[in-house]
View (tube, rainbow, N blue to C red):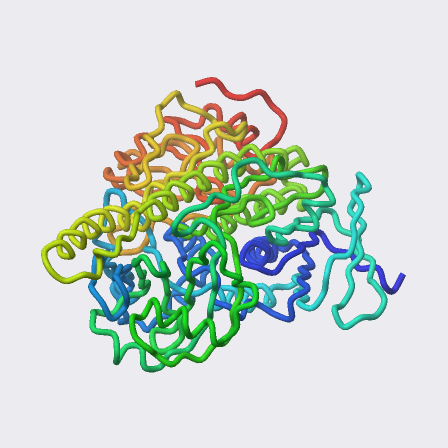
Length: 558
């Protein structure tokens, strides 16, 4: 059958989630076919904030530095700043390091920001292009933009699907072991599976609740007319028009989003309207070139009822839909791909039974519910602030109102953008793959992260004596950390890994500091850098690896 394509995994959707999954699978020698009806990766900026945990995953794949070199110039500020209008009064600001400073600053940071990477302000269009380039370089990865998934059937033993080029022609039959729908909020895969949403939608707020007008624009004269210090995000707060704008290239391109008022027919707006709306936020006439415009809706906090049906999975925006406060949608999608990627690869390569895949939903769905709730909280905070006409008035009344706004917005900007607890604190405590040790995980707080090796969370990070990252010493698959000056035995884990066919790297660090950080001489780290187990010896190595890798066996009791 010349028109029958065989692949291990068929991926519908070429956004960050689908592309990240292709990279995870391709790096592990698993074949995949990615289809997306768009002609290529994103033209519009879309998401603009890559969180630190996502940057750590890009580091794990080897291209974090490449991502950090894109977007804003290395010396461009990444502040978030609030103004009555861009030529008016500055109300609040969160100062953040430039891309160049982030690389050096992170090595001196600890506590909540004990990490291998800091966040990076880069538009999704650049991230997608990089992910695509790396995916296409991997053997067995077939990336096809301009191709759409038309239909599929889970036949129990495989998935039979039909894909067709957007230019026409006959549909092509695809036989895959698994299908992943990373095909966005209107997911055809989720719809065909009959999976609905839980959560809330249609929330109305003065800002970030309801219709939003999006303009990708070029304004080469902006910085010469802007009377304040540069930032990455510029938020306009006034009673006429609430808006925010993110710098795309640090020179002339911006992603501009403005609230649409009740009664306005924004669907009919043109470039002329875009100029008018931009002028309202600017507080002056500033000629712009409109590169694209569109409408989107803020006020979603939705999570799919289920993330899996048989051999078919959903991920990214197909599985959870956010109001984009905090930048959590794109970053949650990347971690979906990381979680599902190593599990699909392990099953397809015969290193784990298919039951391992049943852990995807129990691990990722609670995190989606957690993260959408955080995003809703941030949106409520900024959307509930009332912008009074006094903000722009002269005199003592105006000054008092600006001071009130400053206090509120300075508090809000830290609530939304200084979120190490959200970034690093996601946990899989309810997962059957986690070997519990009876310890109490740290509290889940947006603005505070407590590094903890309590099984189920991100492995605590540290910089080593040679200035390298602890994460850089991990294996790409499973890692056993052997910590402290008196090295514990690891033979049991080596033997168990060989028996189970697992790729396990044993890493010895004699540092007493690391031993204190992990509070155990042995720690088993999953391929996604989650602590699966920690303990004092390898006497239960076989049982630990059986449970953590999804093989059959009863959970180990602490």
